[in-house]
Image 1 (cartoon, protein in one colour):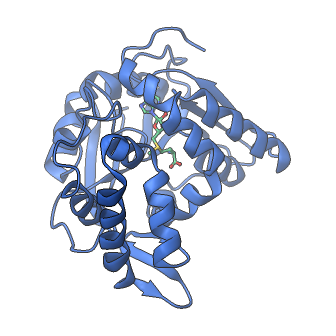
Image 2 (cartoon, rainbow, N blue to C red):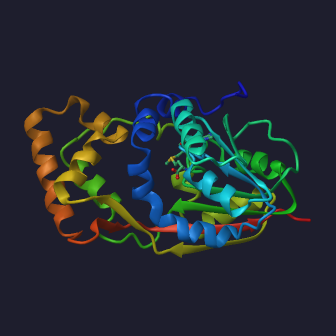
Length: 287
Ligand SMILES: C[S@@+](CC[C@H](N)C(=O)[O-])C[C@H]1O[C@@H](n2cnc3c(N)ncnc32)[C@H](O)[C@@H]1O
């Protein structure tokens, strides 16, 4: 692991409960955010000899998929979270994927080998930098001239009702003083990467060209039914933290309100699914 960490709150969160919960439930989280894969891999257009870098790769599903799309190349995942990387390596071994590797590091300052990758991808792992321009400048250094970037970020444009943000709003009504989360501390992604204009400003300042963002029609899977989805949501790091000081009665009322909201999105054959506004962005390093 490269020892320099500047996103220390992120480091704590993703090496604490948050990261362990993702690692222990990696299939469940992959099902939850898997709706992004089509847009991400469509945009990344990975070719068989590409060398791919996956930023904030977590438990590694997208790194493994990149590796299988590049059988003559290689995919490398970088993430802050030791527990998620343990899981990433385990699954790659179980699946006998040889052209994949994982490394712990803070992508904002990680000493990437210069001009070594054809494509950089990220499924929601570039959201948490304290300085997005510095981070993308560092990430760009890893791309060869003419190399491509394809990233997915949440979108705050045209928020649709009923999505994950709505559920969080419902919960917040029961937690008047919502405590700040380690994953929110020093994070600039909400301000900088949630609109096409914001993404373009950051990537252009980091030296990328041909920046194009469009909204991606992503649906998030939350659970088999409303009760099961609510149980999982209340175990998630941020939500568990919010309700840490809330009495049982209020938490029960919040859970009931969430179950009611989720029931409107149950499909008997497909479980609880909700739209989650997302942006897919492509860009290129000049050359
Ligand atoms: C929402 S999770 C997404 C994980 C994975 N991309 C996926 O789709 O399953 C965000 C990931 O970004 C990682 N992360 C956050 N800040 C990071 C940083 N500065 N450098 C590297 N990874 C970071 C976290 O450890 C976490 O694994």
